Image (cartoon, rainbow, N blue to C red; front, side, top):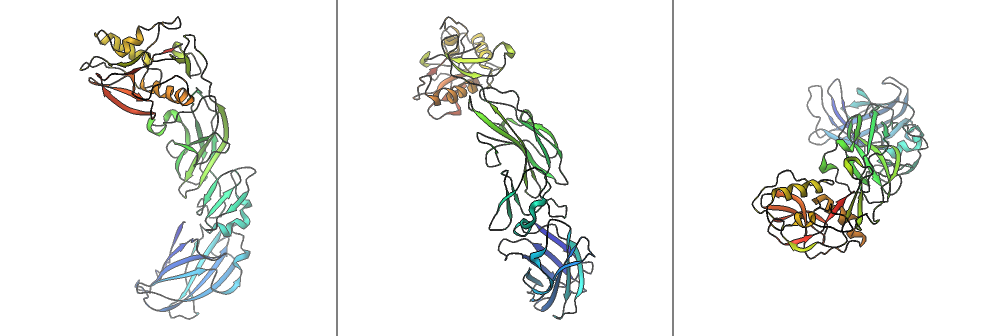
Length: 438
C-alpha cells in the first residue's frame, strides 16, 4: 500500500488517502480528520464531504464527483470509500488512470449540508492496480511486456516477463510504471563453481533505488524468489567482486547452465529486472594426471595452475594436525590457498609426523606435489565429489584442512553434513585426503 497525505491550506482537514485491498471494484478507502477554523477536531458530528476527481491539473476538467454524509468520532476522524458515495457526475469505471495526471479535490460542509467549501486539491500518486490494470498498456521499461494477472487484493500486478509490481507507482503522477534502466553485464571469471555477476543502473527514472544486485537460477527469468545477491543501492555499475563475502556465499554446481538478471527495488517496493544472460560452469570429474579426481576448474592457468585434483583414497584415518601450541601464521581459508598453507605448516612444524607432512611426502600417480587442502577446498570436494558419490569419503570423522584457527586449533570439514564451521584441537586424530594443483 501507499499513503498520500493532503494538507488543506485552511487547516480544516487532515486527510489521508489509503489504497486498501478490501474495497469494492473501482473504489478506494479515504480517511481524514475534520477540523474547524481554529484547528480543533470536529468531534462526534455529521459532516458533508464532496469528492471530485480532476484530470490533467488542479483546475482541470471534472471526471467524477460524489457526496458523502458521515459521522466523525471523538477525535474528528471519519472514513469513506471513494467510488461508493452519492454520484453527482461522471463514472469511476470510465476513468483511464494511465493516460494523464489526476487530482483529488475535497470539499466539506461542517454542518452536514451541501454548501461545500473547498479544502484542498492534491495529485493522486497511487490508485489500486485493479483499477489501473484496465489501461496498463502504458507500462514502460521493457518490450513485449503484458499483464498476466492482477491479484484479488487489487494491489499486485503480474507481468509476462516475471516481474511483479505492488501499488505505489514511481511517484511521477501518471500512474504508469516507468522502470529503472537496468543492464545485466556479461558473466565473467567462470569456473566450475563460481562466476562474477554484475549490472548497471543508468537511469532510475525518478525512483530511489533502495536495493540492487543480481538474481540467478537454473531456469530462465530468475526473480527475487530465486537465488539473490544484494550489491548495495542507488544507480551505477556493480558486480559481485564488490559484494561482501557474507553477501556472496554461493557455490555453483559444475557443468550447469545458469540464467542471470540484474535487478533493482525502488522505494515503492517495485522490483525491476535487466536483460537476461546465461552461462555454463566448467566441468569436473575427469581423471587428473596424478590419477585422482578433478574437482575444481578455475578456467585459467593464472598462478601456474587451473585444476585441483583429489587423491581417490584417504592418506590417513587418524593423524594429528600437529604443532599444538605453535602458531603457523599466514594460512588462509580460500580456494587456491591450500598449497601455500601446507608449505607454511611443513616449514614451521618440526614434529616427525603430522597431517600436512603426510600429504607433502606423498608420491602417487607419478606426482609428488600433493598437499593438505584448505577448508574451502574441502568444501568443494564435498560439493563436487561426495555429493556425486565420488571419492569414497568417510563420514565417521572430520577431515583436516591446512587452515589454522589459532596456535592450538585448526579447521576441519565434516563430510557427514557438509558444514564448514568446524574446528578442533590440533592433537585430534582426524582423516586426511591429499590434493594437488596443475
